[in-house]
Image (cartoon, rainbow, N blue to C red; front, side):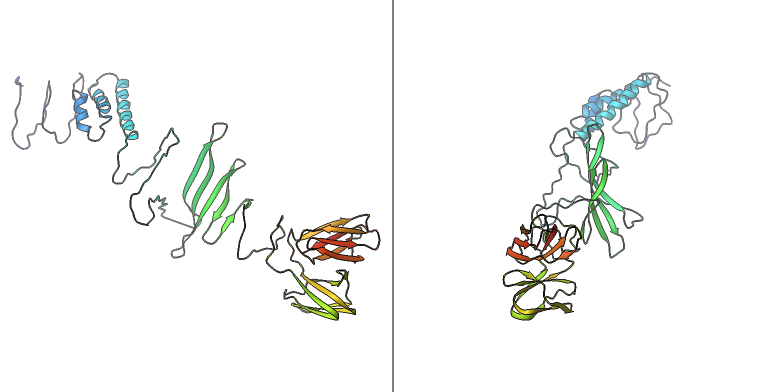
Length: 387
């Protein structure tokens, strides 16, 4: 080939099948691809990092010189393989550093498979701000499970709270999880489950569904205040330390004067009732006969005519905190404090040895928290007082 110093080309699309250049190539722009083969020397393809910095400064102003330097060392180097790898790693590190340190604004949609944010302070690791002025909810964080086969009981999103234990091991201490309860079109229902670390295992402790809130797996309810509800379901047998009044009326009291009969309309809806009769001295006595004609009424027969009162209690409706048991031993009289806030409670006395119920000599109500029981003889017995 002639030893020309320069070739000048004109036209819109000059083409070469091959071009062998000993020095450099200059052009306003290059379209297509350039392949460099058989690099045996050290060609300076891009002569300086300043040129590369100029080309990319629009995107990475703060770190463009570092990126340019690594690109230049990668392209111009013809040394060992390890040296080239070092240049590649430097280029990658520069790009990564510029992304981590970027403080501007991203627009459009970023598509990422995972994202890790590392923060060495206690300041916010992620802050999302909305400046829109309406009353609509904003900002909004959405967790979407885009399943091709959604089904009941599918978990659809989760927030985990991780920490470490004293062995420097990563531990999930708590989780909040969304769950499909019913995936049927038109009748969809969802749950939120709460899980906590308990004894080294993750345990679901609570579930909030569309119609109820459940405490699960032995989780107790501890309320520092009042519990109010339209109704309470169950027999109350597991309740303890109940100090508030039970709203349902469980006793009905009615007086009578110089009567041989007394009728009480108690409206308990059962014949399983407890009837206790007191005279006008507040002493309990056994009437001649007690009759339950139906589930809402009771008739008491007495001989002779007596003045006093009859107390009717609903049997089988006792809760812990509405009953008091007292042991009398080696005494014939005892004043018992029951603290049931009931002036005329139901009192029953049982011999401790035979466990048979018997009528003491007298039972007297002193006030709403105290009664007096007098026995005819020394008998060890239990006095059961019910509200």
